[in-house]
Image 1 (cartoon, rainbow, N blue to C red):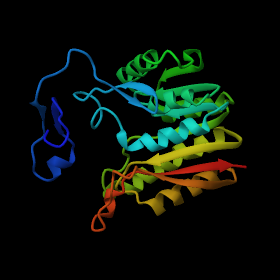
Image 2: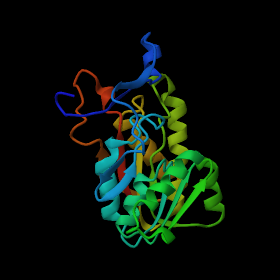
Image 3: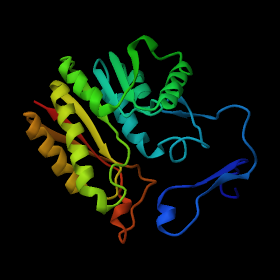
Image 4: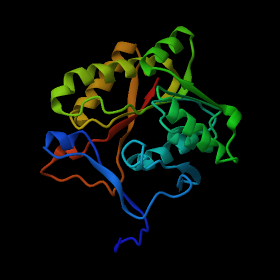
Length: 253
């Protein structure tokens, strides 16, 4: 409060890792009380609601803001698929950047409802180019392949498949599967923005997984750029797992 002047502070010390450390989960207002309306933020000119009480993490994935800006820069004129779209952060930035269409998929109905509300908060965006689909992403990717759908830009930002190194092998299979499908759904010279937020999957292993996925999909691909959290997410040299968010911008031939 002294550093920021904030009038409301909500604690979200409720992650599963607290139980591993023998700490009880804690959440609630520690300064002020709930506002009458859902708070909004503006990110790169796009308004977004933030549910600090019930949303994932802080209610909004701030660590992806630079990558969402890159999505806006890349989306112009491209048919776009956003998997695990949550409340529509990448989707709305793609629309802001001039995407010709954006199909957004998530298994959470409440998250998609908020995504639609977020789109309505931005009347400057072309709502007719947005499609929201509540479905299991793995099953939906298979369905899109069977329907012979193709996209120019695909975003894969899944939840944490490997909370620790113990889950790395199982998580690697899941990451491989979704990336195989994504590579198969790309048009020639299409772009894939693929991410892992699992601390148990390091950057080199993730690059290897994506490489194997391209091979399995029969696509020739190259890495245009490595993606990560922004500069206000420093990584301690003594704790490499702190570099949890890693991503690749790939292009197929």
